[in-house]
Length: 522
Image (cartoon, rainbow, N blue to C red; front, side, top):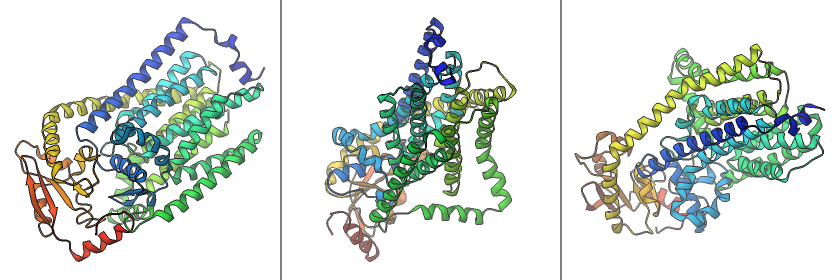
């Protein structure tokens, strides 16, 4: 009997009270952690914690449903930035949820996090004892103590990249489970369907993910001799999706899109501004400390059993590659949507690598892995817990004033026609999901310039803490910058509403360019 047959033998896993107890406890922990993250995010939405991205994605879906494909009022067309096919897959939900779609977007991260943790646990239970599966899966959930801070997605609320690590881990688990069954001449429509679902979601996140899927299946094609046809098939499919995504971006790119070249340019500008030794010391070393720690843990996991699995190794290498992409994109924080998937993938790879060895013997390498993997998560998780409580306290301290400011916005909405674009303070965006809005000073003096017919700015008020003004990116004296093109038409205790009465030649040129993409009055 080979390893896979042995691992699936029901005699090996007699149901015990301890097994059931650990399973219930683990599921309760997953549920609790996901609910707490969801609570933080939903409360953050109501209390103006998020700006731009989550609302732009919602806006893109709304405009697409009304015939303006991919249009947003910040970058012109989101599909000119990236091939966000995932937004097209979410259109049925937008149609049903309408203005409440932002809440679903905020919850996608916690949902995929919980589902990946659950599937990982039950996958490990087929190979190792339940107590081992419990410890390893719990270590995965801790994600080196950055779970809450990363999934909270500070400022931006949602970005498709945040789901990438979970999706690749999920479709890899489905592949491994299906291959176990294939060794017994069995099949499972559930694992096949699961693989298809999570693979489609992964490559639809943006064209970069299709490129990573190409590399993933190229690596498995090279090293997995028994499933070459399968790997070649999805290498070709991923290649076609990547080419389609690249063409998609080229077709829908506008003058207002930034493009990835700008991000890479910013990286080299940063190096030029900083002395190289300072750059290496303060940025590179700190950035790769966590990646290095995770890499040591993965190599120790491999050396602990010396069992090579091409899918697990490919997942690990994809994580390193994605962290390199993020580095070149001028992003040096593991808490962002660029880097957090790397942590998920490496942590998942460590867990899966340990899970393919059914021996209970603890050797030096396995001990090293568990020491780094579990203890580091426990040590660093204090930062996550501190983040949770500090964020909750911040919510409490400003909930009353946000309530008053929210009421003030609703009292001025009547002054702004629904078919006009309004530039609003970024952090108040949740109050404007039912309107065509951009985030000041975009639409006014920043691209796309001149498209806003109305502007809403905060009014100087002693009740509003200065820190809150910093959060909404607007100072009261901003009104002096727009007086040549806008006039004040209404104000209340917290906000001022301005209406356009003139447009400069430079802004008019930008407005006319935007009209080519979106049907709006000249």
